[in-house]
Length: 628
Image 1 (cartoon, rainbow, N blue to C red):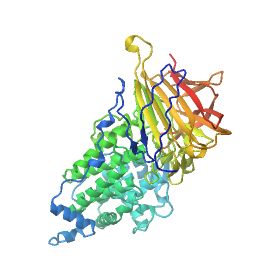
Image 2: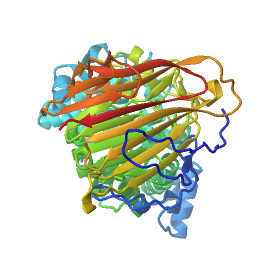
Image 3: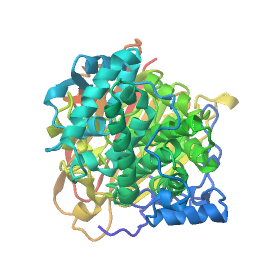
Image 4: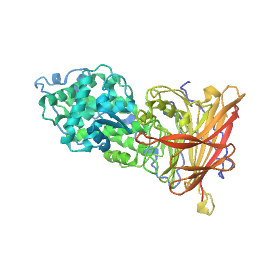
């Protein structure tokens, strides 16, 4: 499918039973394949009262960032080091010393005590699955992606540190790193030496050095310091070959931390800072969202900078001002993906990571802010109305070069009321390999695993292997506005927020545009929607197609089907009763699953509106309302 943007017809399709007047069209923001804005939208009216969000105009622009002002000598040192001149050659009058650490880092992010206890008992514990350390293949065949990141990135060190006093943990750390070093004696192109894993490994070795260097064996300590030094040298030469931009960010963080904490590291620090700021500019959009559009990747980026900043503090140096500015840019988009319970939504393969973990990460960042309501480049729309919260994927999926666990989720949504989620997505593709079998990852990335519309069970964007995506939704048009009510003048209408979005993912195959219109009342108790298939282009319009609208529900929601087949009653744990109704077609209740933040699958249900419609287009109206 071509990459050039196309203007999608914006004829207003009225919601006949909504009670709200139609709104004239206005220019929309058109997003390219990677979420880049390709046409500016006219300034939107002020949002209605009660929406607790900051405006996107407060976001910083990465294009304005540059490296710190350096003296001519520092520029020369950095340039020479980037050309491969050894740090010792840049100061020929100083005798090269053995590698040694200059400072001890205080770990800013506490690990999982349960996982650390399992390590002391001889097992890796990840996403509910125990793997005996003795049986783990530290080299050879690929592990599942989550296990690879934990084992080769040494992410387990912080879990071990969190579970017991250091003296009890040191033997475990020494035993595991000895097994890993024996299996990976030299860089050989195995997954252990992916740039992302190596960057995480070097950073974790430096931060958790007391676990690795506190034993009585001097020869072992010297070997570990030599491995740290050699790993940093390998990253110096290979960081540009990273598998994706976030992996490159991890590599540059490792290089910069090594420059700060190893002797003779000034040249490496200058080299690492410049590369890191450049890589962050390539990995993050102007509104602060990572270009993979994955909340898990957003968390990884924040965690990397938080841990690197701890290395600066240990070395008693100030980080470049750009790193603090980028960290401030990264946090608000992450907050925009949280529901009323403080936990994460299920987007782009993520699970519902719990509130405590998010709170600890944001607290460690030191950033005090509120969520963005309209992350234009990242592509998620957040509408808060009192206790009601609607999050919509209103952008094309990420480019293949950015995607890690890319999902065909365009125009899917999640809806919660207070701390209770109601409509969700399955999620969990990025956590597969634990209790979620790896073979389910492809299905969890499909359009049908999200609360949106599918045609003939085809994905709106092709789902490829290894987390990548192919052709499909290329252009998304978005129109959001506040619709004032008449409550202040004595009328019954409380007002609403109207979101209209459309994508062209089914255009090349069927000649149809999927347009979704959603209205959330300002009191948060009513969500109305209409999904339209609008013909476009020269594709033939004869025959019929199968259409399915899916609304995946939180596992805690109890269901009772109505007698007419077009309504379902939803009972929430807080005692509230909601009703979902279809304006025309019957609703069926089918099985589904939902992934929590630990990668555990929970049985759930989904509401499905399934029918055959002509290829000339059709519309489907539905309503989710709290009963009084």
